[in-house]
Image 1: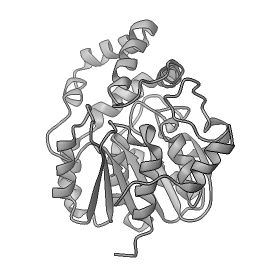
Image 2: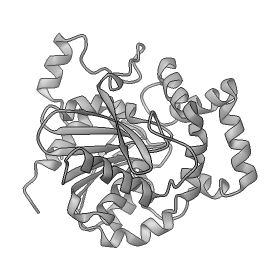
Image 3: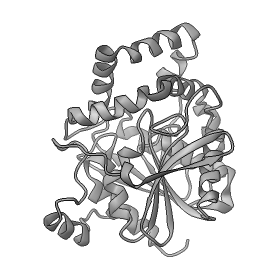
Image 4: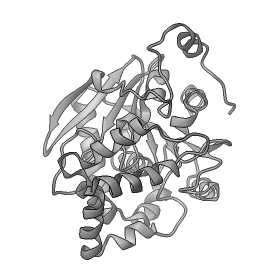
Length: 306
């Protein structure tokens, strides 16, 4: 599969000052929030944005981010698909608080949301932790999912995240939550981690402030730590052999969070998998190089039935 720039998107960007701009540009604006709405499902209120028409594509973000991570890809894919970007429960402007943040619960909430939107079947795109959610949706609700796109996916290559092991300690969880709430120190740590997710760009201060404010909103730092605590990568890996959906794996060649070598796990463990590398991108290639991601995703979704 080869990279390409959508001619329609390129022309629009040249003529329309309101067209999608890179998230790391110097004048960040949250372009999804004006399109967003809320839906109440059992046990949660979910904030989502929707645009376009055609086959449905659900976008599941990594943590501790929000639907904002998708906004450039969102508008590109909406040229020929019905695209739904979601603040997953516990993140962004969706409901937070004590509760179940297991993959099974999050996946169930995403299916409830799609049912409320009268979507019976969809493609699912997930980034990092969101890729684990996408896989769990496909495994738990096979009749609802067509194809999967996994972008720099966690939970594939074996082993357990160092962070996951650490946060199982209640004392460390309490300390980590306190650090995240200290505005200057917490923001500095958050900015450092976000910067490590890019290979070619530095996050604009307004983007850092946006993500950090959403993380702290309604004690979202606790939702984040609970999600890490309940994330069982080993259990997910044991189930991968049962994943029958066609999968496209997209990986940033300069990912410093999950190195490119991790992508080999996708190819080894998923029998029905196509892999592509965006050589100059980091952990969030859909933010750094959205046109390249959109081109690859369109080609994959347009492939004849397998």
